[in-house]
Image 1 (cartoon, protein in one colour):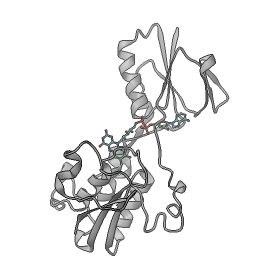
Image 2 (tube, helix red, strand yellow; image 1 turned 30 degrees about the vertical axis):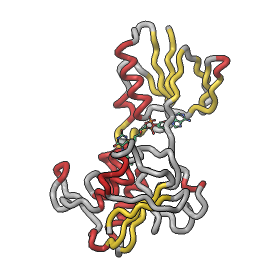
Image 3 (cartoon, helix red, strand yellow; image 1 turned 30 degrees about the horizontal axis):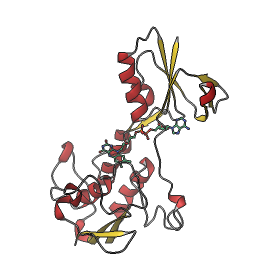
Image 4 (tube, rainbow, N blue to C red; image 1 turned 135 degrees about the vertical axis):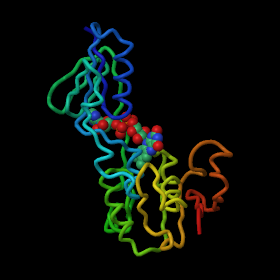
Length: 234
Ligand SMILES: Cc1cc2nc3c(=O)[nH]c(=O)nc-3n(C[C@H](O)[C@H](O)[C@H](O)COP(=O)(O)OP(=O)(O)OC[C@H]3O[C@@H](n4cnc5c(N)ncnc54)[C@H](O)[C@@H]3O)c2cc1C
């Protein structure tokens, strides 16, 4: 039996497992995924939690639901890849051998690497929607916010879904905020309480290629090197 080992059973790992299980002869190939977290996060849904379109439970599912028939999920982390031996060493003490290895361990945010970011204001005036807990906390923060200047700050690139920061601003100012997108109310901080919103990015543009990266002309690049400031709405 040949062994396909996939490290990480997130979006990429489970998609690879499902697609390959359809094309590989399963009497010849054994598919094993390794991931310490039993929960699958629907990360695009994090963007909608602050606005009440999704709740926490809408963005989570058991990972097992995405493992193809015949595939196996080992719930532990990979600690070391030993390419010379075609093996991986796992946190549970096991060593797995492979004929083919897919690394799909994704990426994450590390706010503690930016001085001042994950310190006393983290979770108060500084929030994130790039994690489930962060998105839920941001929903509360926006609901209780007294108003003022809203800054969406992309600290460093690359980030997952480069367009998400702009999408966040679009949702804040969504003209149909009292309508029912996705069959539900978009719950909002009152935009009337936001007198300025900025989107800051270390890149010269947000996502995609010009002219689309210009976002329909709603922002102008600032002149400060290294930190372009784009005033989106006033
Ligand atoms: C707010 C937000 C909005 C987004 N919107 C969109 C969108 O509209 N459209 C779109 O296409 N994409 C969007 N994305 C991006 C999309 O969610 C990611 O690109 C996608 O989840 C990446 O898949 P991945 O498998 O690489 O990583 P993940 O889905 O993060 O999976 C990585 C997996 O690896 C596991 N892992 C980590 N370390 C180890 C280890 N040592 N051993 C074993 N397993 C490990 C983790 O537990 C995790 O399950 C968005 C993301 C965010 C955060």
